[in-house]
Length: 283
Ligand SMILES: O=C(O)CCC(=O)C(=O)O
Ligand SMILES: [Fe+2]
Image 1: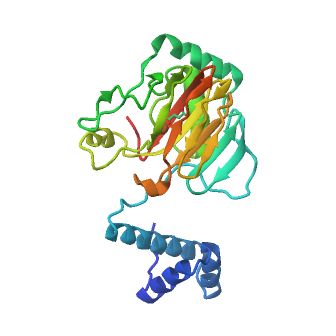
Image 2: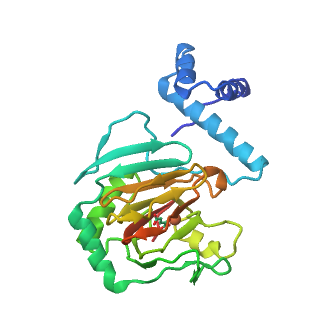
Image 3: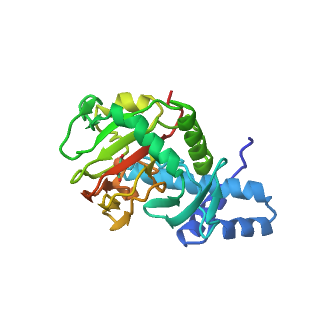
């Protein structure tokens, strides 16, 4: 793609417009009125605003923002075509970026995932900050197991559905992790991204880059408790069989407000399947 030429004056003007809170499409319209083609104007606005934010991030010591899955559509369709299944959008939030999906998995898929996972469960671990290995930690009292991508035809179909729904390639993600929480078990609030400052993150980042989003799919409905909580905004997603909570984080930083946890199961049990999305192919 040839890059459009942007003069320093135009760059300043675009930044000023953005700082004044003008929506990008309004800025693009002004540029079109001044003789720009729509495509060139969009590219120019996108590039200038992105460069400006990156520059700001560097100056303040923030890691730069990256592209994340799931397009942001305000007041869009409530039912999305995910290929082999229609999925509902139940709630949509911008900061933190959270989308609650209804009916992502069928009842049969939920039951089958639990049965495949059941004989493979072991105590869940967290990432060892020193070397990136696994660590048993009191913050995480669930049991779990990891599956490779496309473990069987059902996994492959679910992964293809997620790729279509989130508009993110299926190989830009880890295999599914299935977790089981008994009564009282929880996963204390944490971030899913790898802390770039920790030496243990390096080997994990080399394979597929950062985690940029998480999709937690509920495989059963606990009798009481077990919601996924977002303490920064006091929001909780109820665990309902077949539904899922998606959240993204465009940089490994608390400003994404993506702090979240699995609240204690008060009565009954909780099963989830978590899909972590990566920046690049995770091979
Ligand atoms: O169980 C939940 O609700 C959250 C799970 C979670 O945070 C994770 O798997 O990283
Ligand atoms: Fe998490």
